[in-house]
Length: 507
Image (tube, rainbow, N blue to C red; front, side, top):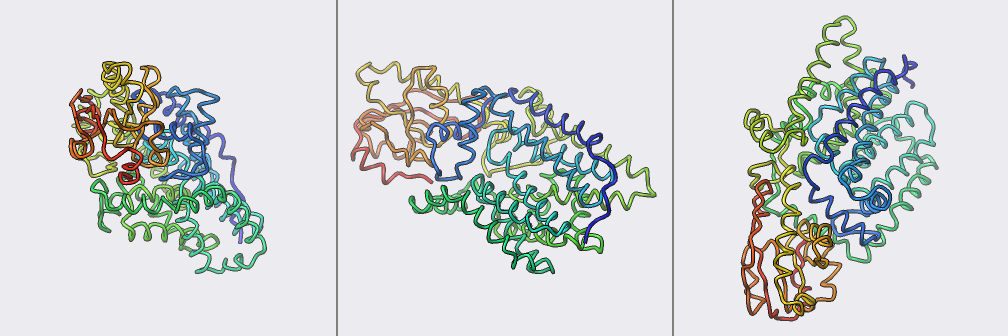
């Protein structure tokens, strides 16, 4: 079955939205500082490999490419995420067009991406989350063309996108499982007998093979990391009702009617041709709810719901022109209200005043940690260079002979990566850490007889060193609370660092 022929090109109504979205990201790219995870991915890019403890390798490869072509400025780092945000707008409009939407549906589908708080946050940074919605949406788009055009070659596109997605973020398995479920429950299961499916699986496995071999060689460390992450005190566990309410908040409450309509559209007579996609979206939502996943893990599924919702709303509003005018205005107004809460548009003091005014509408909470005075997604952009400067002062106060064998040990990957990024300009050596992939990189050449310790709460250090001396304090005004601590200089490690290293892994 095919939808009716597309009515009009999407370019005149969509390209302006694409340009505005990209421009907003570029104009705010250098507003605050570099993000914790960006620092870590830069460190990973300087240790290129086929895998890392807590993520697949694609983001490190992308970061390496950016560093060697555009440089390490904030604008350079955040150019590709900004372009990804624009591409997601365009893809959503094209999907609405494929599904029979006219110019209004295409316009509304494109506009729906712009005021989404979680997208404004995650597509601000050079992280794997900036590209995840593109992978999910691309797979669903290819699947819809498979069903509408009855051309099995789109199975190969699904396989290629699945392979790329696996190299970006393992969560790509959720839409793939959802799509499989949707196909099994609908007449489209005939495609499971197609020889093209074997080709698609082969492409996916070929693209994923480097990381798979790395995972096998290292004993699948991601599973251990994820297990520990689920038990962390920082993880927010949400019940079913809270999880669903979170969806409205992180996706913008004004958009809730659109994606709810979009989900329902797949189960109407008009949406029957691509019902497996709606089934997949529902499966993903229920699965992640059941797994008590973080609320934003579902966010990449929404572009297809915005597209289908826009198609349905175009039909419903054919005789209600006032609705066609009012709803986009509501989206723009809501975006203007929410954007300063999730993007670095205002200076920190002005943000605090604005946040106080709209505190009850703060749309996103990532972790169960103290977040004063700024939300975590902002506070993680502050304090890294100041911390490095204080560490450098302590390091250079040591006798030159001691400096030569003094290690800088960080208790989390953000501190370690900040030392590696900012440290060279202050004459610091590379850091060591027991966190994430830093643990696999080992203690380098250090024996541990002299160690500057970052991020310690004061416990455990005296257990392994003969002397522990408080040497400085990190206390950036806008950093998160657990990034305010005392820096210790520790001497005389026992047992030897090489022996101790195997016991201090913190995944």
